[in-house]
Picture 1 (tube, rainbow over the protein chains, first blue to last red):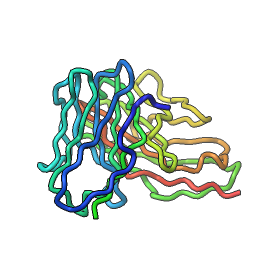
Picture 2 (picture 1 turned 90 degrees about the vertical axis):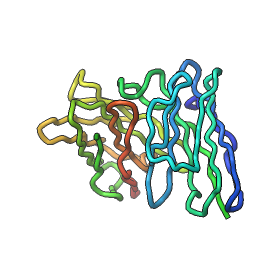
Picture 3 (picture 1 turned 135 degrees about the vertical axis):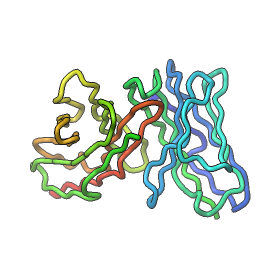
Amino acid sequence: DSGVTQTPKHLITATGQRVTLRCSPRSGDLSVYWYQQSLDQGLQFLIQYYNGEERAKGNILERFSAQQFPDLHSELNLSSLELGDSALYFCASSVYPTGEGSPLHFGNGTRLTVT
Amino acid sequence: AQSVTQLGSHVSVSEGALVLLRCNYSSSVPPYLFWYVQYPNQGLQLLLKYTSAATLVKGINGFEAEFKKSETSFHLTKPSAHMSDAAEYFCAVSEGGDMRFGAGTRLTVKP
């Protein structure tokens, strides 16, 4: 058990809809990261937060947004969903920003299916 | 910008045989390098990490990796494969604010 909790585990929704994925980091970790995993794109870094502030941005679409709250949990909001957004979304956390050598601890992911 | 390339999307070995999973990195400065393993329906788990303290890094489950700057490589090895090693393995590099992963190598272990 990594200590990172993601909810829900599965999500099925229709095109055009909006969903929110939630992540609680491991106790004591200040950094939260979001990744998207799909068969054709592999594991893509979306965005990173450190202690409530956005720290780094990757291949995140404008339809997607995220935030980290004062209690350090994070939410990833996906809107105007398309079929191609179907993927496994992972949250990970670390004590320090990973650029300082901290490894990531991953949750078990949220599987999003857009129909 | 940093990146990693994993050579071979699928590797198949017999139980008891040597496991060698290849990873090459591209980084303008000495990087932090990692290997992760992903079992079906689970998140990634850290196997080991290189942070410049030693070029040979030992990880969990009998895996180790050697950092070779001259070859810009960080290959993962295990002397004797076990059935439970069947999984997907990811090499990753961090530099700056994020961690970038390779495409992954799926390891199959034959009895």
